[in-house]
Image 1 (cartoon, rainbow over the protein chains, first blue to last red):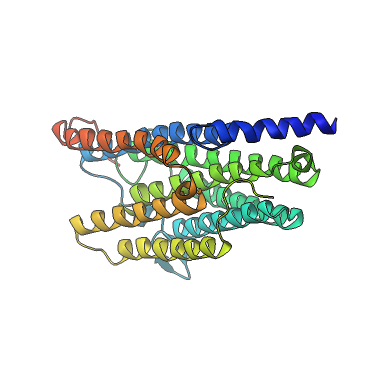
Image 2 (tube, rainbow over the protein chains, first blue to last red):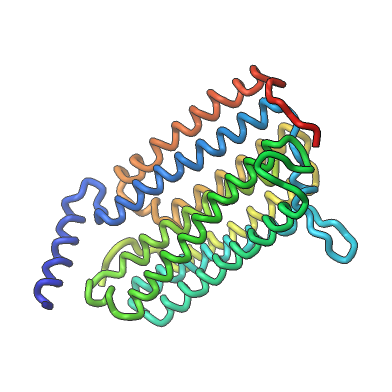
Length: 217
Length: 102
């Protein structure tokens, strides 16, 4: 049993040395997925930009996404909080990867759990935002703020991104379990944590562009 | 045991801090109502800076082999081509969308 798993690990290392990218195939495949996913999000954003330019008018996101606190209206506060949460989660994920390389299991699991909690609170904020807009009458075909396409792109862009965050939380939960039960020790490599980190940082990267193009413009 | 890419924790924390600063800056640019062309230019610069830092340090791309960097960056150039090709075209069909009054 032990020798069979050792040879598997050697096989990975040999592959990495022979690879033109000098990276394991798992990591290369995650990058392939990320590039494809980036192009998908890119086409959604280009389509959004095209539609918005061709209509000429648009809803004012600063007003639509304002929060009322103490009788005052603070523009985009919820979005600012969501950005803060996601950037924080990227930081905790980076610390999880750093700890995984030093084989500190407890710290790795701690930071992975923190990342998952931050991811879940991000999705929670999004649920609040969706609920609020749907209560105001926003539908993919109509909304009280501007052209009907505003609702369509709001649900498509944020929904697609939110699904990515939710999938990421599930992915990290599986990885954390594999760290906890010693699967990665037996495999002899903690690279899975780094690869899961690639996905998580990518979701943060997409938010940078949705935040800029959908909420701030 | 040496495996994968080692990035010093100090570097992670520096980038983390910069991401907070740049996010706050983007929010600030929106709140103070910077005049039209400058707002777009500034926001795009800030977004690209954030994207570059996340990819280079958090995603370790800056520590990978050049062939992997090219393989990732090259397809993304098509996004730029799409943007340049389609956004001006949007003005060509200006007003042809049916817009129900809100």
